[in-house]
Image (cartoon, rainbow, N blue to C red; front, side, top):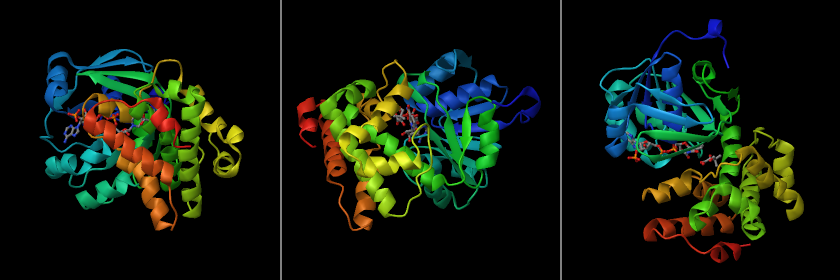
Length: 333
Ligand SMILES: NC(=O)C1=CN([C@@H]2O[C@H](COP(=O)(O)OP(=O)(O)OC[C@H]3O[C@@H](n4cnc5c(N)ncnc54)[C@H](OP(=O)(O)O)[C@@H]3O)[C@@H](O)[C@H]2O)C=CC1
Ligand SMILES: CC(C)(CO)C(=O)C(=O)O
């Protein structure tokens, strides 16, 4: 993190979508002295207006006095987009007039979120952030960080945002955002099964039968990425060599990948962002995560049957609002 002398001058920062990740960034930036405006809606907006934005957990406790609006009213110096990828188009459309030429950091899972945002806004002053933080936003106005891990930043405006966020949280730079997005996509293969069975990520990884299916989905992701020419970038302790091992080594070796991810997650139960969407009755990003592997497989003339099945099962849980027995997942691999 930056020293006092290295700190950037106070900036007007807009955070579009102050949920788990956006709320964490907004609260920490406000605590560091920046002038932070967030956009939100419903009970979350009301709670932040009434009580401030309350941060708990791994980055400490802070109630941030942010300006909370439904949509931006002024042009900020920089903006962070932290809505789920399913909400990008609506959120940018609502704030188009204020974001015309403003550097924008897209903090999302999945592939190419910054390119999508740049295309929708008609400029290329964009960067991408891949958050290894685990955070919950299940109570209006409150964000709880359960694992205060680093965030990886890259893209055209990467340096600017790495400097800004580096003031308040651990940041790593990537020169190959796409390669890092793929590594994060591989890590996000931990999301779908917890969302199907309704258990924390750590418990799912601890279940040998569910872990086997998770490894199979990771293997598909690794093989499809490698076949598509992706250069997986190192992330946490997931090295390019380990990605190759994951793709081809026997299960007993490959399972080290989810086990290492679990070790980094800490003890506090982590639902994962996909299960949080389900619990809030909202659409998930599964089409942009497991679905992205299925799409990339099709482009490469391959198949990704385990990911295709997981996409279907997550959609089934979205529709019914009922988690499924673990046996339904265990039979996939
Ligand atoms: N949570 C986590 O631990 C992690 C999440 N991520 C990724 O970060 C990204 C953000 O996820 P996360 O923070 O969990 O998501 P959340 O759903 O917690 O936060 C998104 C917030 O944006 C709000 N929102 C959506 N559309 C609009 C809009 N048009 N105007 C204003 N507010 C809007 C949502 O409100 P509403 O609830 O009303 O829809 C919600 O409060 C995702 O891509 C996720 O995959 C990455 C790493 C970890
Ligand atoms: C890394 C992980 C699993 C942290 O929760 C995440 O990215 C998510 O929840 O989407």
